[in-house]
Length: 225
Image 1 (tube, rainbow, N blue to C red):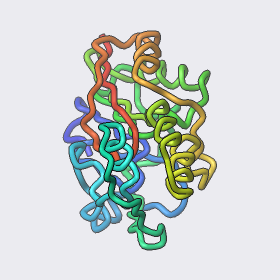
Image 2: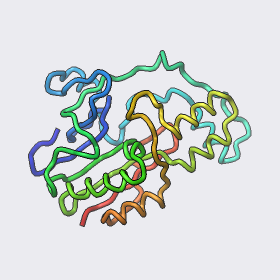
Image 3: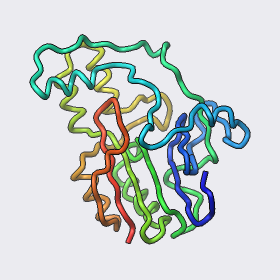
């Protein structure tokens, strides 16, 4: 959470990831808890951007894909851990909030961090969401937006060998579809997202890949001036 009202840093779509120094927000799906009432879950989930996904990778499909691109002939065998064996972190947040209707006054937010959120909006709504975020940021405020790389993911699907790898890559394109919010409604690559950020009024746009993923994704940083 923030230390004072003059430095509001917002983490949208927090889920089971609780970031230090941010107000962690999400929609009320499945079972969730508020941070004030469950400090034990906060202690379990708390992390930083640099170590955003604390848990180890559950498969080596993306590793194999990247090795193929470098021309490596002898690849490690595909290895995935059954989903029933994966640890699912409990969802703990500071407050309920929807990314397209955040509960802040215009020009009051220092930073908005949206990790794997923006792709869940359709093309026309996505433009409105960017305008909404721009209006909330202070002058000099920062937006960090992290999305799947649809071109690299498509390439991954083409090079997939096993049915498990193909199914995994297909899910990366369309989303898990586990609930109403888990559908990918648009695909992005750096040039496309940069253009949209410019049209929304952001400047000083650059790639900022602070977050490590086990699948094709990229982050961009943009400033409101």
